[in-house]
Length: 134
Image (cartoon, rainbow, N blue to C red; front, side, top):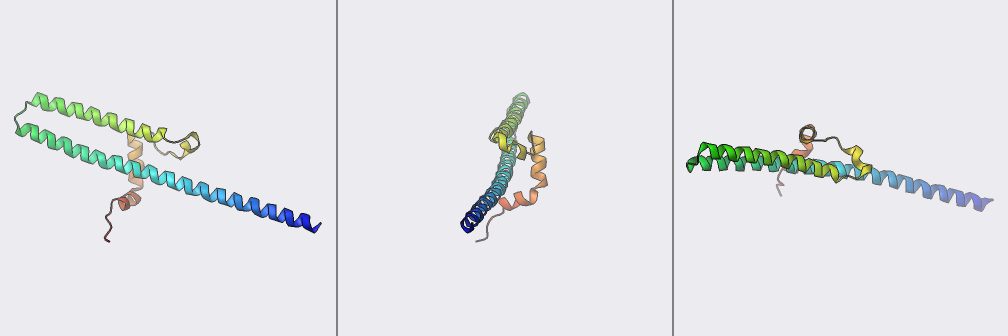
């Protein structure tokens, strides 16, 4: 009878250990996914800043070169369309990268809601871009 108790206690301990390991691994996975979402959105936002700077610089260069206003306006419209398309495709790619199990972790569905999430987590995102003083 004692051996059965020992075996049952061992099995209970083993199952309990596995359960807590699974819960800890799940919590860690969720944190990693949320951090990856924030990081990818921050990189996208930063790339939009650089893209806007490049567009503005190009427009100024075109004006200095004497290119017609019609060509400059055409360039602006074309780049604005490219930016809108890039934003839509980038967010869709992030969303599609999540498996069905992790779709519930998504808190955004388009560029505007993604930027709202990024804004609400700005303290975490800012720490990503702070340079180390080492």
